[in-house]
Picture (spheres, rainbow, N blue to C red):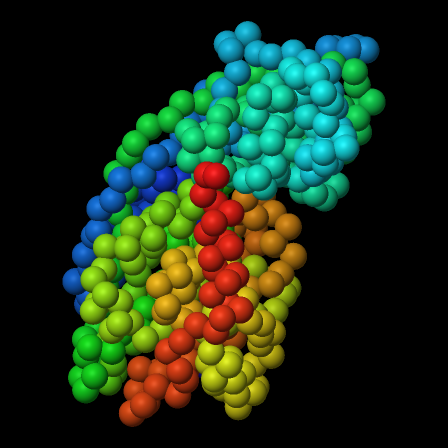
Length: 414
């Protein structure tokens, strides 16, 4: 395990999670500069890929019960959901669960209380009926989510100003009659960057293995495990391989704007020619890392032979790796969409309960959390990079194709 410097990974994760890294902010810029400096110190010549993305800024939010008595409830805005008039909107509180049709009033102008964020279809159903939406956190112990819907929903389907509230606060809303909701947020186009560093293969340079993670965080959140930890893993793997000359090309990719809908990885893959895509044999994607008191896991988006290869390697070296065949809501899926298989590696730990909240902070990080998964990931890469023939098919099974199509279709406007 000595070759993978898990202490280095931990220290990088600490440095990255000192401040939020939301797209288009100073924190994101500083994180990018740190990554570039580290790559250069390891002997790489990193390159930047610029792209434009739409982002948002929350200016003001307020939720207040106005009947039977006045009481303010702390809330967090759902990015891109829309905005109220400056004075806010007032309406009856209606519990709608998951936008169940039987619970929706015939009247309009009410404020919905939902047990989860609506899907794309239910979002469209609520437009023009509800004047606002209050989404209840799914656990009594979870802080307020700082997430966004795809901006296309608001632009193409309409505005539905929405906020999250804590589970326990929702009880008061459930017994309230009327509430006032105020949401002010602005939108703008900004430029951000993907970061790449490459070691060219000595024997099969046109066969490329990507090692990926996203370096951004959601708005106002340190993003220690999601995904300072994954970014740190990529840098530690780059360090471990920096003095090697593998048979295949390895490309380290740190993507921007993942939290806004995989924007950086989608931009990159969409910009590649068909011939360039064919050269990519597989992707090892690292998302959610560094959380102690948990276990290591993999989601395989590829052929059975890829699953068996990963499974056999884990057993050979004695790593307990939970493996499933599915699609992960992460940058690997941008490649799977184009027929490129992905191994998504992550840490399943108690820290997952705090992802996308202000509690996803460095207190969750520990060097040991990087040790076993880092060792295994490095070994996996070395096996693929140096095999005379890649030991699995480059294909996406029909069930995974269907899942990835459904995943992306759910994110687009109707």
